[in-house]
Length: 203
Image (cartoon, rainbow, N blue to C red; front, side):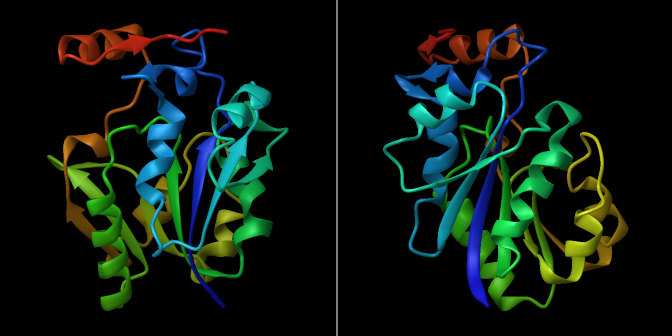
């Protein structure tokens, strides 16, 4: 049994924004790069990136990192297909982080804290929360749920699993970065107001 890996879901088509949000640059670094970097720790054995929409551009953006690319040809059917595409690669890991590719403000301290809780508690799922709102990443002990995960559908991701097995979840109070994504032009404008330099990088 291998220890802990990370799956970053980076296959979506950013329909609400109209261009690929993962390639937006925040202070000269793409969203997908900023989403990878907190997981670059010796506590994590492997990072997998699931790609689909504009996969060549995403692969090029992450080429300097030691990651494994997983292709999801069914990305238009929702997030669940990306999770299922990763299962053959991650089935032997004890714990798996599932992270969204558009979470550029998660910090490494949170990742390390989640791993500590995972290894010292007898719960199977670790979820960060900010002001009672559940965020990402989620760290899950895969084996008990792999069969159910293989049957999820649509864009719900792991929400159904978390809700169904809430007695096996540890919620960790965290910071705003676990819920801040880039879905709309308003989200981008809000980052500019906070002083970030934004390049849309539409290709």
